Image (tube, rainbow, N blue to C red; front, top):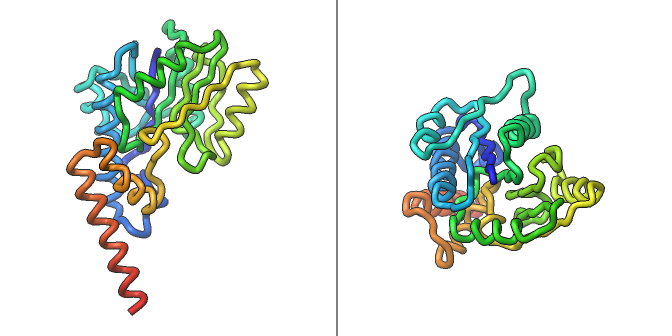
Length: 228
């Protein structure tokens, strides 16, 4: 199993949080959550290699720390889908039978639970797609494919429906796994609050927890000021 982690430039990440968070805060958030994801991935067994698909230069040192690989974005083919498909092609060409895509903004990423998801996937059919949807049920935060190039990337609006439709057309077995750890990404301030609500059940780094509480409290104070 090869795992691909697409990562936006930190300066361009989390734009939907531009209201409550300043640019420097959004970049710090992206960096810390990516670090959490990579630290957990490094503990997962049965992963042959991890490829970071990104144009973020500071990731090279982080990738080297964990023994992961970098695949820089191609400016001639920009965008998430193109970056993931390039990485999938490289993985399959190097002999990967199964290839997974894991998003980099999952602050509750847990190595042990990811291994359980791998168990589900490896126990599946020769044509297999295993997914974890986001908490809205419209996006995909984890996608595992056998063979690795079974699907092209269809991330974007309604990506959950589009990927499942494409998998069905290929005759693949589709398994959707429920997981708090992998369904909660960070696009809105409400997502940050949702992660805090789950912090008693799942590990959240002290640094992230302190940052999340600060931002949520700031938003509460702003709301109180507007009502005053």
